[in-house]
Image (cartoon, rainbow, N blue to C red; front, side):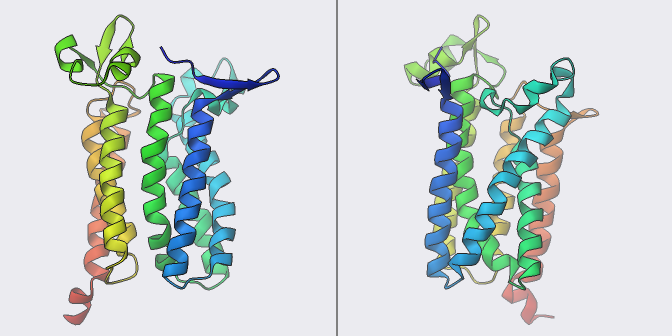
Length: 256
């Protein structure tokens, strides 16, 4: 098992999970800044939005996770603050980030979808990086698999996915690779987008498709009755993205 602590500063442990999350935010912010300049948007407003969104997304992601896993924290509520142990839910982060970003944009009378397109590739890149934090913490893994199946993966992944005397699906890897593929596609689309919101809506739809299938392999899914919560949200996001995409599409507008 990999050591989740990268190093210590005195007696203070610095966890790989935190390093990866910080790296994701830094790279995402730099990429969004670059895209804002290309799109001739105000980089000052973008930086203000990022400064507000990052803490909001962290709080939303943690709060969402804790709420749906409260049985794990009820006897030790202070553990809810230990985010270095893992446990950030992207859907909670997205909800909080969108709300805070929208309120700022509305206050300053900006175009929400222009800025959404700028940050969409950064979000999916951050998700791809963040999944490796799950890998190091041995969380968000899938159902047991045979030694023959896991032998197709690099040795370091095999060892880390050997949990409780059995191998497991490296679902973190499936989602990370899918997110990187979506990221590459969004970068391609960003330079050729036909309407405001196109990149963000493609992100919502494509990420949700991948999450829906990966979620079916995970052992730690939050449940909503008999359904996996992440799959329910993924379906809703796919439907919303398709609906808005058809409404915003120039072809559809020309026909109305």
